Amino acid sequence: MSSDHDELFKFQASPLFIVAQEISITMSKKLLLTLVIAAGISTSTHAQQDPCNNLDFTAPDRLFNAVEYQCSIRVGEMLKMGADPNVTDYLHVTPLIYAAIEDQSLIIEQLIKAEANVDAATHSGVTALIAAAKNGSIHAAQQLIAANAKPDLIDDNAMTALMYAAKNNHADIVDELIKAKANLDLADERGFTALMMASWEGNAAMVEKLLAENATVDIQSSNGYNAQTALIFASDKGHTETVKQLLKANPRTYIRDNFGKSPLDYAKENGHDEIVILLEQYQPPAYSVLPKDKALCQQTFSQQQQQPLFYAIDHDCAEAVNKLVSEGANLNAINGYGYTPLMVAAIQRNPVIAQLLIKANADVNAIEPEYARTALIFASSRGSLEVVNLLLEAGVDDINAKGKWGDSALIEAIFDDHVAIVERLVQANASLDISSRYDLNPLMMASLQSPKVVKYLISIGVDVNEQNKETGETALMTASKRGQYSIIKLLTRAGAQLDIESKNGATAMSMARNPESKLRLKMARYEQLVPQLHKQLEQAVSISDPEVQKLVKQIIDVAPVGYRMTSFERRYMEDKESMISLPTDAFIVRRMYH
Image (cartoon, rainbow, N blue to C red; front, side):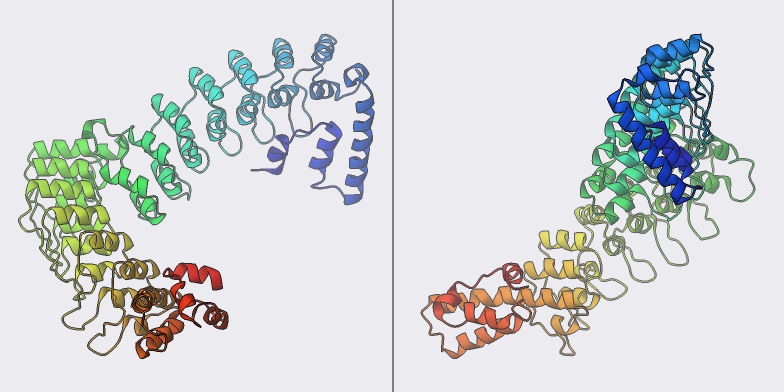
């Protein structure tokens, strides 16, 4: 946005100060200082007198001065004396625009009666209505709309009055603009619509208002702004209530941006668990009510690049898919990658088209020839719970089928941390006694990078200390090697043993790759040892007993106290009473001494 555009909305008490601000871009510091000092003198003089009684009716800027000091009577007198209501300053700003910024309804009324141009714009394209919308000047907006100001004019950033009002949460002005038939789907230079701006800001009430007026929900940003939708914005930023409103409009939740990410991906990536649940549980409507790109879909039968059915699936043309299916298209054809139409729908996480294909008896058990993957494996890997449900309900033959590299649908879902799909597959009796391409069991696979799945598997009672038959390694060792601090914490709290050795004699501690992982393992060891010490002391065992001394030494070795070990030992390790007071929670000790 240009600097003069920004400064317009910093309208100050003194016109001379405005001039000083604007001219400072090109003037010398000395001249700017002179102007600021003069502004101070002028302000002081105005403070002692009524500015409306001291206006110079012959000054070229007389009308601007009268507007600035809200002298409505003087404005009327000046207009009667022939003052031009469309006079502009050096920024090409009219008195009407300044009055709109300050919501001066009496002055606006006089200027409009004097035939001020309601659509006049500044050098940066700002009209009086845009200025009113941006600043929340409701009376000005109403008067300008009543005077037939054009609601869809844009400034230099291609922003309309509606966009500014929606972005800044001026709901009353949005209502007025809607009544004036403002175009809800115009986009600014980034491809952002008013709905997208409200979603970005997390304004659920504004989103609800715009959707109620049929704002298009699935428009994607353009001009280098990554093809993102309102739902992607809200999901990325964690605006739960906004997501709820957007889902009521039946959006295509499976749309991906230029980074290949969907709303669900962003919600998972940023830890917005409530939004993850909303998106995973979302049930898509019938294809006929979904928005679509009509221009692209109309090319389904004329384009030559792909088989029509694959083209229609790629471009989300559900109605075209339905037409092709009803006309007998080959539902089990394969494209250049060896994928069937159902596999492509699964890859694109498109439950609407997947449902059409399944109802038309597409083969849910078809196997992709090169890597032996099925539609269920694709859907599980891509995180489409809706498509997984459709395939399971259709009765896939083998839920545990593996691809060429040895990964089943469950393993694929585990690796990508799609916990809802893992739960669904386990409920459908997917085997937990299965290994991945790396010869890892499900918990070990999850321990590579999937904390939510680890938490779920622990909750259903998997053995956290199960060892790999070939290597003797445990899930804790896997997490330690990968430096997965949060997973180490989950496993140790669930009873994972630190002393287990692999077949080559390594332990989780020796495999830990970073300081945080090592610290967490030490803290876990501390929490295992302290209760053992307390139990010995409660049984009246002497602190000089070899077993007690062994425990004391081990506790000192792992206590998370940093360089303050001497202080820790003096406080807790010198006599029986202090040992009994030793905290069992390692985090308490760490907070005390780190």
